[in-house]
Image (cartoon, rainbow, N blue to C red):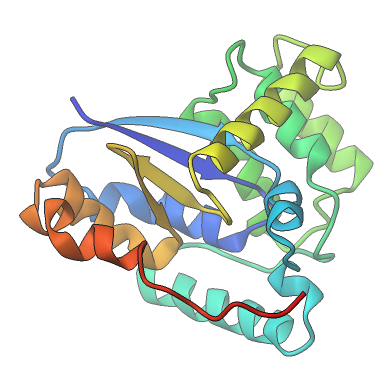
Length: 212
């Protein structure tokens, strides 16, 4: 059975929309889903980028677009009271529910829903305490072991070529974003295009070299 690794951060509305849409997009196919929380800020910092919510104009567009996309795909979504916010408590809480850097769908959905459904403040201490009581983590979310798991997941995603979230990994190929789900399905179905020249050629195309 093919394995899809889903790299996500709770700060990304596209991560929530992708998790909700994935079963519908891949309906009828057999696959194993591995869910791994990563820190988007570290991916962006590595590549010298700002997050969408840090760029005026792009911030507003992102919020409008995700509201539209949620409506189109039938997903529940209300923008949180504060965004961006510090996602570390939620990422660590999710990882504290496991022992190996992976989380199950129930946990992933719970932490993403905490942010993207209801319109409340994701960082509200009382809400975080209630979520922790619901999830009953096996480990202390603030333990060094849990923090190490998040660093390890993020570093592994970088090594594989991730630059944003959500990123889906299948057979060594990386698919970025909610709008890549159709490509992911085609690859999972064995579309020969993915073994043809166009996939490899895209990575060899020269680009502009800016003076330093």
